[in-house]
Amino acid sequence: MDVIVRAARHPADAPDLPAELPAGKGVNVARILSLLGSDCTALALVGAPDIPAFASHLASLGPGRITPCLIPLPGPTRRNITTIDPARRAEHHERTQGPAVTPQALSILRAALAEVAAPGALVAFSGSLPPGFNPALLLDVVDLCRAARCRVIIDTSGPALLALRRTPLFLLKLNQDELAELAGAPLSDDAAFRAAARGLSVRQGGPADTIIATRGPAGALLISPELELAAHSDLAPRPILRTVGCGDALLAGFLHEHTRGSDIHAAFHRAVAVACAAALSPHPGMVTADDIHFAMRNTYVQTPPPRPHG
Image 1 (tube, rainbow, N blue to C red):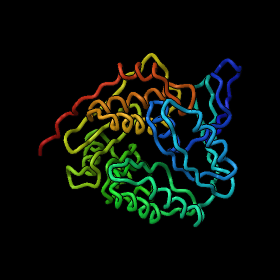
Image 2: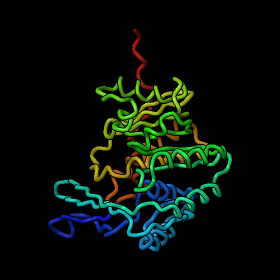
Image 3: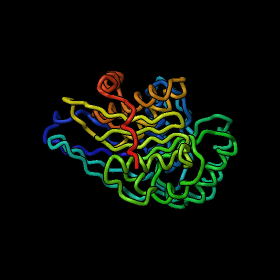
């Protein structure tokens, strides 16, 4: 659950924002998919007192339909508290501790995954691990989906990411810090960044069919079995209002286009534009068609420079 606190001097300094927004990386991806027009299932571990708010929010979205599968945990959902100061265009973030995953919740999760798992289905695991859900358990449920011949997408960090570093995946989405974590070394320049991403691709014996690695304002890189693409955006004079959730928007944009049969160049272009639209929006976790069109016109996708020889 995201809690939004305005620090504006005057009420008109910032647009009206919700006091609380049901969120979490997987929920964020589902929300953007719905806003783009894709149907999806949102399977989430949610504190029992907050399930009505999550269910109501997911039902209110569209035009795509979200099928909620909300698994209750004892106690309130973790709060991500964001304080926004529009005058300085600054954000401050704090997080509370969330409830622990119970054996009963884990059993429900496995059963729910088994129900939706089908050959070719896209299953995205997004976010950090809650208390009581260790990397071995994550690997177990990922293997459940892979055994059903699902196409597995991973967007996580820390021990969870390290536990999956050798697991065959359809898509691995990383930011620069996560890529450095897997590489085991800081990525000091563009060449090191690209080399680290390539090392995770099946093209070089890595685990993932497709890698999408992001670097904030420096753009993003995609590596697939067929090609390598780099994207950057120039959104001036529009101000960047937030960066939290942009990676979730990018993933949703890519999956939305992929399910519609777009080629990988078009899907990557739209994905980066959707991420930029999220950064331009005053409302967290939301995108508009106008902002996506603006970002599409100002996002450029190209083949990166060739690798240095020697």
